[in-house]
Image (cartoon, rainbow, N blue to C red):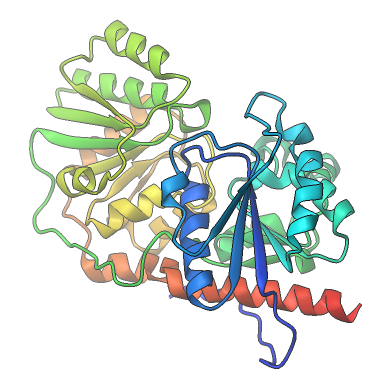
Amino acid sequence: MARFFVFERDMGEASARHILIPIHDFSLGGTERIAFRLAGEWVRRGRRVTVLAGASDGPMRPQVPPGVAIEVLDEPVPRSTFSRLHLGAAMAGPAKALAPDAVFLIGNFHFAVAKALKQAMPTVPIVGKVSNPLVPATLGTGLMARALAGWWSGGVDRLVAMSPGLRGELSQLVPANRTLAIPDPFLDDDVPVMARSGQPRSPLSLLFVGRLEPQKNPLLALAAAARLRDLGVAFKLTVIGGGAMEQRVRKEITRLGLAEHVTLQGHVANPAPFFREADMLLMTSRYEGVPAVIGEALVAGMPFVATPCTAWLEGLVARDATLGTLVAAHDASQLAEAVRQRAGQPFPTADAIEQAIGGHRLSAAAQAYLDAFDAVYGETSRA
């Protein structure tokens, strides 16, 4: 099983007792869902956790666990194209008033608030999870890429990569001593792997789960579906998720003549039944960090076909090719052919799935984060 970075510390050392989680709002998102799960576990371990929101918009507020305090800015900052540019300044005063011992930024989207929070609270450590690549892969790792990565992550004391492989990539852009690896906890400790027997059925049941946004590239999923139809593969594609591209997706379904093959479910609060019923997950993202949807599919016994959107998936496939297929390019024909071939192969075994993703269970990751907060807090208190 993968080895992750762990802090060793004397339990008598100072601890970060109060952890602040700034979020823009309660919009749907994987980083928000993971952060709230971590927050609940930290409370269960005796820490105080406060979520500071820029606005109360969005449906995820009920998912904040009991015991986690919620504060919303008195003068809300609704989400807009440039809202992140002044969210940090709006949050700085209220954040300082809450007197946290550490700040947790749940993903790259929220790194924009770090500089303002650091200026207001220079001795409070800020730990940020790198949920997606810091800079576009097309920039490489040269001087410009390193400068952009340093600027975007300015104010963040420790950058958390979601796997050792991703930490290696991150360390090419920022100093290695600013980085650590903690597995992204998309699995609860008591969730069993539901292995399946045999192989996918016909007609094949495909599942796409993700926001209908450019990053998730739903139009590529539809193009792959059209190629599958042209190859004569019997299938149904269910799309779970909503977003700004919904109307464009609907028009593309009509244009490609896919109405009999594709069903749009919109947002689904509990997609677990869809994972249990589908045969295969289709992921067409342009980029990802550690996509929890892959873990949710695998724990339901379902393999995946995906674009080359993250080094984490490369590691999974290299570990065990029965888990899924990673195509070489963001190409509809390659995706369709990979789906066709995967449909003729057995489902992955429970042992293979557990070996691949068992490190992403909640308790170990929650403690690793607390150790990180405490270590950086201890460094700051001794300075």
